[in-house]
Image 1 (cartoon, rainbow, N blue to C red):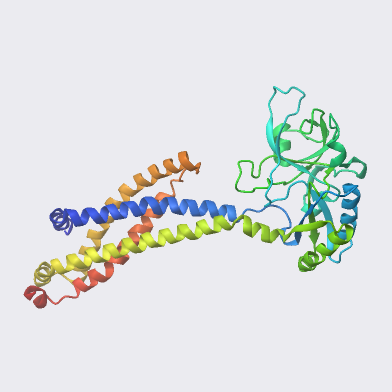
Image 2: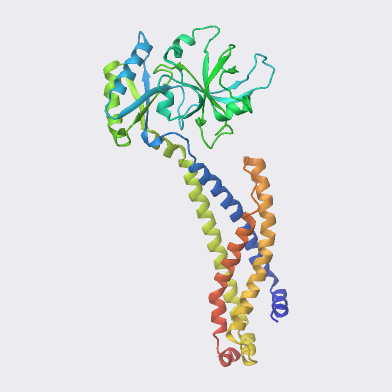
Length: 405
């Protein structure tokens, strides 16, 4: 049996064996956590906003503030944009997904301010908001035309009265579990209650995947922003997006030449920019994993080659005594397997400790335990592959040549 000779040999080469074990342990600990981080980022990158992103165009307008009636100018903007070829619907929102702003507020279902409350994303939008964002009602109805109010009028009220609200499914279930939320009160806009008139399947946080509120609670009020406080969201035929982007500046200038269109992007472009850092992180982590595995592999190859050179006479003696090439090959593979196993065992403990550090310092989720056996299999396979070439060279040595070396 080769186990006892291997252990005897490793005891005589403690430093070299120890270095390989430490290298494998560090690689194991880092690779497991890096794979976990990559999976988290990929999940974020694949996030489904629920919006028809390939059909949406975002337009932001700035002004010097000389307009006599911003609501009247905003109305002309909306009418002109809706007349463009390929445009399905247009609305104004106080915040847009993947944008640079996020409005959130606490909501409750009773007038008691000391009672339970929930933090929810706060959307205010004009006509055609549900159609433009592709929101699907699962209970209740859309806002009626007479229920919309201009934000300029609501902001002037000492005690704002917005009588209706649409909530997403998560918020409806949180506030009124086990029953329909339609017709129930919600305190979220001023001190007066709003009545829930509809529930949509999905309404996401403006910062999806990067906020604790992502895929959480959100609501939409029928409060129409002006171009000063809102962003135009235009839903088009997918092949008409570029044409709408080219036509929009002329519309804004024609309605009021004192304004500029400071933002004109497709929602797909905004998504790409929003997740650029996550894609870079995935690339960086993949590079780290590849570099560590390559360094570890070269370390195993170098050590195995060195030991083959050092044990040439021993190999020749064993071959002369009848050892086959397969037995010599298995000898080095078993030796590597033992070293890898010790390194992996230490690395698994290190991976768990590193995961705890990332949890406390960067609010990362706990490392799932199934990453540990996956990492172990990868490193076992890498070790056997790396040692294969030196082991085959050793097994191919003729006995006479090995004994004379």
